[in-house]
Amino acid sequence: MKYLYFIILLFNIPGLKAQTVTNNFRIVDADTKRPIPYASVSLPRASLAMNTEADGLLSIPGDLSKMNDVLVITAQNYTPSVSPLNKLSGMDTIQLKKYPYRPVNIPVSSTGKDSVLNKFTWQDVTYFAGVHSQHARFEYLQIAQQFDSPAPGAKLSQIFFRRFATWGTYTERTRFRLRFYDIDPVYGTPGKDLCHEIIEETNKDDPRLTVNLQKYNIIIPGKKFFVAIEWLRTFENAGYAPNRAERNLVYKPTIGILPYKTDKLNIWVLNYAHQWKPFTYFSPYYTDLALSATVKW
Amino acid sequence: MPALIHKHLIACIFALLLLPCVSSAQKIFEGQVLDKETEATIPGVTVILLKEKKGTQTNNRGYYKLLSTDTIATDTLQFTSVGYKTLKIAVSAYEPNMFVTLEVDVTQLKGVTITNSKKKIPQIHYFRMANIKTNDHNNPTLPFDAQYMFAVLAKAEKKHSRITSLKVGRRGFNDPNRPTGYAQFLLHILSVDATTGKPGQKIYTKQVIVEDNSMILDIDVSADNWVMDTDNFYIGVEWQRTPINERLVTGIDEIVWKTTAKGTQRLQDAPTYRMVYQPSLIAFINGKKYTAYYMNTPGNWQRYNLKISYMVMGTPVPYDTHIALSATLTY
Image 1 (cartoon, each protein chain N blue to C red):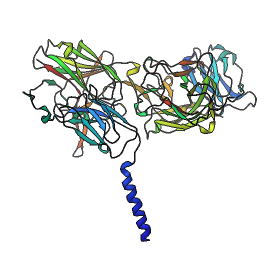
Image 2 (image 1 turned 30 degrees about the vertical axis):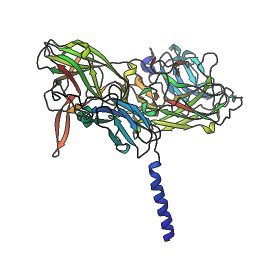
Image 3 (image 1 turned 90 degrees about the horizontal axis):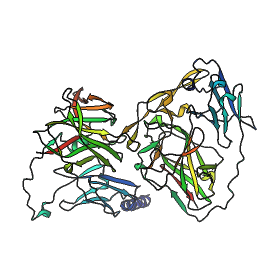
Image 4 (image 1 turned 60 degrees about the vertical axis):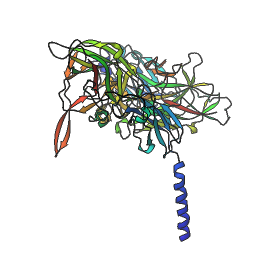
């Protein structure tokens, strides 16, 4: 049995230095009681986040009753769980409720046209998001590009993005997930998932990645949608910025930023409290990810 | 059997005839156009892909960028400018970010009186296009890691010189032949600290903004009236540590360790990322005396002393290097 430790907690939460207790949790589906693999776990106040492994196990050292933070657990197709740490004392299971997926019920546009949205020349991409800098720490779970679809009912057929990698470099091996969102009608942020299937991609060292999405039948209900990269915050996927230290862990892949300015910021990031925020790091200069989407409509 | 061979031969000949019409993928042609003799950059040069019929003009740094969407393998890049001989280069001979030099066309200059064309212009730490192309130092982020400042001691022949231009050579961080676009930095003229001999107070400052992939940056400061009271001063580059000026580079691979209930396990090598700042300067071999400093932590000037070793008769021989940073003066 594998237990994943929040070892960094040792250095961040007061009163833990002399801890002797380890609190072990299994994150499971509320109905089936089966583990949820690679659930995203974060502590917003401590600025810590990671993914569980396939067995859904999580270990937190220390006396939970003395901790002030909240534990946010999210997984695709499940309602997020937000629990004060001090309320978890004595528990060994955290259950997530599956939310019912309702496919988009609108006529599919069928003019026979293809459009590439946010098209770019990959050689022009020189900026990347995904690592800490002297100006800001990069503490996000997902990064998304907003698109304007040519018509409601378009089908997403392919995405292409640029990342920081050098061919032949073993260390750029990565595994990540793709998420697709409708727009939240109230806040204008990424909203409901447009695809209930878990789309996980692996790659060794390609700086430009193309993912064919034909088989997932992703229909965009309105004229705005989002494509997001979800980092799998596992040890296999980790790197360091700027130097080797637990608090400097970052996760692959880095995502390119287009060196062009449009009239609207189209990049969104999901923080550890599971809130979508505009990504303003390169504002007011750069507004889009190096991520294009092909739609059939 | 001979009929079959004949058939294949015809097919091969037909394929060969078609070859010039076959297009390859999208390609970017970019670089700088220089005067062959003076190595000054030439603005306004017309650059055309003759067969694809696509063209552009060089900007004020002599830089051009031409995006060929359907490159024809047998196409030719043509460079034309008034006063220069037209130059043609086969696209198959194009090299990334190459320098193109144009020769003055004397037949076009009839009626123009040229006097004293060989007049010596005082240049301090002069470097040539060849020094940039040689690319002697293959680690783009060393020796200063592009963090705070670099400064080189300049010795004018006499006092009260006027600095008219400064020239900087730059390269890419990840691809030495392709500087990565936007760069903003400060050029300084600094005094010589009377006690330490290191760079002292900033006397003049100019901000430079580059929005293309030029490798030679010729910065005209003639209108800024930079007159020096002393014959010794420093020329400095200061990196501006802003998000838009950052570039990501990977460092030494490290090992990721994982702590589990079973203990600590070594997993795999992992990249180490860090930010450096535009521009990436160029070190080239030059044996002349050279006094320069770099600052990688605020306020701490360190002596620049980069040596590059080459194998000579099986033995590594270290050579002193200079940084491609020069000044042009008038007296």
